Length: 426
Image (tube, rainbow, N blue to C red; front, side, top):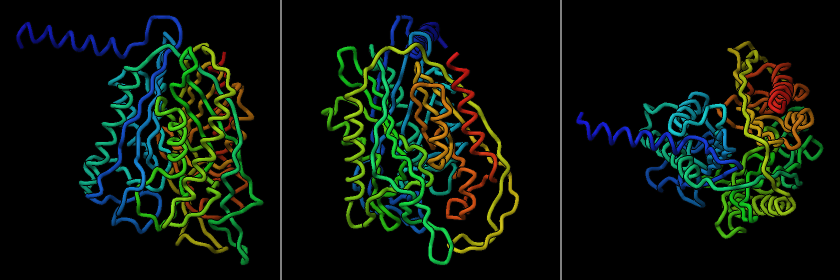
């Protein structure tokens, strides 16, 4: 290698490191970006969330995106990345977060990567060597788009302030329904527990112009049902689009699924229409915009983060899944649950790698010492369904497929976040 080439390479590496390093200037900075990850109509890709759709999508209803927020407090940086896919397995999330950390110099525990849990998107594959080459190629494109969104958000860092608030929306319903024979299965249960809380984090310029909105709500991305084969970001994607339209496309809206393991969208799933998607999305967006308008943003103290891994005893169902009254479970390998806490001043983002039942989300907020706490699910991995302990008594679909034995997950999540948040606030 010639001296000139070595000098040029050294300058490039120094420039990349300088771009990734936290700013030395006082005050908060933020940047946001959005990158399209909509697949082509061909090749057809297997879709997530329901069996029987392995032959792939047949139409594109609305586009899928990666959205990213970068934050800088002058000493530390953080990344929040939402992807309009069902989620990521542990090993897949690890690979992406490791690449993000390596390319941005942001520590892994300062990165939150989550799927919005839409059931209207292709299924990402964890291994680049997957036998479905088209799906592996699409997954590789998604990964590159995540990196692009993160880099773009970092390049757009500018002076900012932040605030948080809560609203309410009545667009979800408990989906664990009891039938006449005493069995439990997927349905609508108006008497079941449901969390209507909508959490909002607003990030704006000093002049009040919105940079980004992070919102979450406990609802499954299943406004379109199993018969749908059109690509769609579903209800949370519609909410993001509505918010961005309200701000004339000048802001980025990240929507994260809350503790929605037992929460269905309230509106219909007619596969020939998207009215349920649009109704839920519109109502969520309108409430988020209303709450954002009431938030008084300021510069929080600092960015702090922590991660914790919990192992719970495992189990699996013997025999077929389905609606019946008699079941047998046997021991299985333990379940790894990942807890990721990102503190933005007195705002706690509690990321959990699972589909958590709503009451666990509520109890996490109640136990938190932070002024505002938002639970982001499907975050930094995938541990499957995690019910609260009492719900194991009604053996619905979620109880049949959870890989965790009762008596561990609820306590580990609620106490784990409470301890991490309490420590980070000191």
